[in-house]
Figure 1 (cartoon, helix red, strand yellow):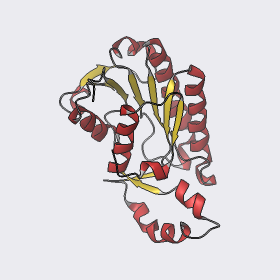
Figure 2: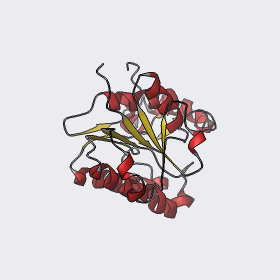
Figure 3: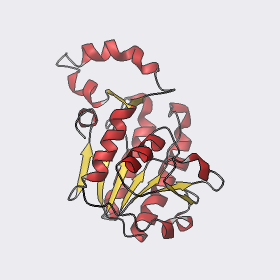
Length: 219
């Protein structure tokens, strides 16, 4: 693999971000991570911290280069219907700021962690915000990859394992098969692998990665 010009990660100190940054570094990608001032020590060793405010593009746009890939992971932890207002004030606002900053920096490929579409009605507000985020990225004209998991199983995120028997049944019934696969569960390692795959293989235009592709074993 040719030497990477680098990856900029917004949300690199979180549940998915930290293992992603570690894996990118292991694969010899230079990585810059947007962090709150004072949180520089929370990123994996070897990554370059970029102190800034995820809601204000002017605080980090000039520090994105020389990275050519931008990964957007910022979002409210443990989404629930009660956090609908935060989805707009944090998730959507940070996405808008990141697209602005990435465009200023001449980013070639924007990777956005979205959500399964359409989603169950109980999470309608969350899905709507992520769909709006995808539309903002499309409007920017950048090449983009949208990854659409439903729930990512891992440390502190294990309760959906109780639903595995139901998924097993629903994925085998013709009437529920497509929906069960679209909102199927993925593991944290699968999610990280899918993100790395997206970084290393940018599309010509816009690519959508659904749950079945996130579950792929090959890197």
